[in-house]
Length: 259
Image 1 (cartoon, helix red, strand yellow):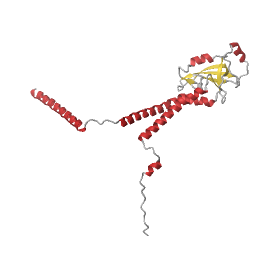
Image 2 (cartoon, rainbow, N blue to C red):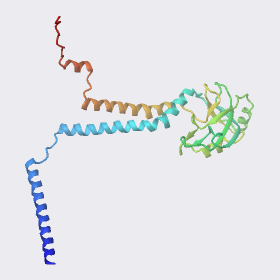
Image 3 (spheres, rainbow, N blue to C red):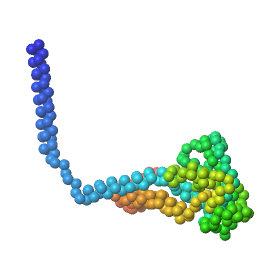
Image 4 (cartoon, rainbow, N blue to C red):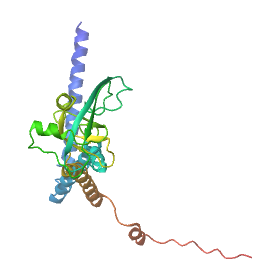
């Protein structure tokens, strides 16, 4: 027992000596190398500028991946549709509540543009196809009922927007179908001059243009500008011709005709 205890004591003392030597070696190495050099003001400015530009470039570039399909693409499609700028009058003719993936290739309104649709609502309307006509917002219900006798267009589909989908709180399909989904409903609407079978309940050209500017043009410019500045700061972005000037031209040695 005494021999075992003495061996343990010797091992502990050896371990303590090893640790002490390691600490002494680390302290000697630290004293030899001296304190770490301090960065100059220019180096600090370059570091923080690079970090900020890299953050802007990555953030703006990544945001384009989400903003383009959700906001920019619908806005461009709406502008391409060339909808009338003055609201005309629409009358709901019928409504169909469909089930099944094959029956729901489109929907007047659905919440979630990326989800598969197994239940959908088809709302069909007719409208007054006259560019000089404007919906009378101050008209009484009786006056609006008299306007329904005016000759109207062929049946068209009613959409909450050009894609027929959206996300709350901007798009609430229950309120949309309750308001426009009963036969005989009269309301202002906007039809496409390119495709008169497509009708929307709201349209503003300036809003679509602002959406494209805010959600595509601005992030794209931020990404390009920050990337260019990063290239200028850390890369050799000169033209190839300028770089070639500094290179030494190596001429091939002439081989004499030994014949």
